[in-house]
Image 1 (tube, helix red, strand yellow):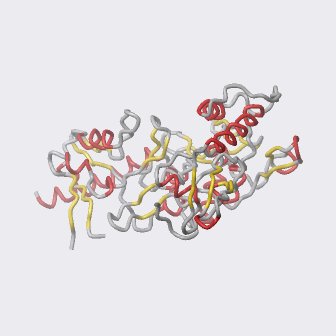
Image 2 (cartoon, helix red, strand yellow; image 1 turned 30 degrees about the horizontal axis):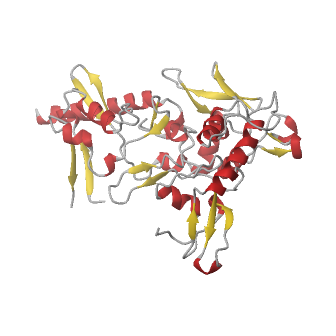
Image 3 (spheres, one colour; image 1 turned 90 degrees about the horizontal axis):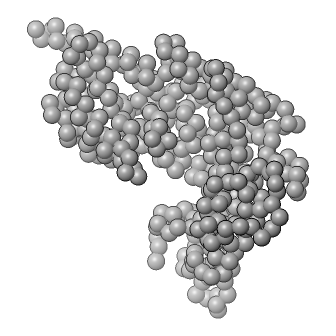
Length: 136
Length: 249
């Protein structure tokens, strides 16, 4: 893993551009998907963009009885293989940060996969609160 | 010419190459069992002197020099026959109707079962239950009377209400419902975990206990719903941001 997805809440202005970028990036059948990232307000005009933290000891990977969730060794993200997913919702219930989600539109489980190595949210973030960069 | 690794099944290679082969009982999470027969393909090899044979591609491991045909006149005829039989058994299933229409079968030439269910006996439900390590349901009886059922038709003692069987069923035969904080499936009633903060229900208590025991997931992870967990995370990160702000000021 040579990359890191950084979230800097103090720079977030809650414009929700990341949400739009994510939803449109994950468009399927001409319908935008559910956004994997949300700016959530914790005080007036104070926001935290909440997205999957790609934990090292991930509860979602452990909870999946069918090995649908696997670590992508190149990007460092945890990727969901939809072909193996049976929608038992174990990962959604198990994630301690609530970052595995159910997409009602496409009726499938979704989670952040860092767009396979080039996150759209980071590209569109106007204040650079979301940064995807090389480390080391 | 297609590349494949040893031990791979023909169907997964065909799917990867974008070749459309119909299959009803195939799912990546379970072992193939070749029950729906629709993925039948024709195979031959150079040294076979024109001999060929029909195999279910989901169960046939790849070989060097194998020549595979997926859409020939004979195969279409075979699939039409299978779909004709499926239409007789499951006249009300949307998936069967759609697949049959693709092959030009609009009505069955056999006698239909008037009040039959839509089960195609593909065993996807029992296979996924086995994969989960529970094996709560199985096929019972023989011949025409064969059905997928829990032991002795009672509440299945091993069922944990995870819903995998109902979700994987290609023809949506397995009925279930979530009502008033309880889930009912296979005539067994399960308590759903209710979020402490907002009251939203998540998975069943039994399923959570199974994950806690089998996969060592801390129990407190299951106490609140995903939305409330995100709010908690926001609050925690927000506190850190505010602390850092005070330090810099």
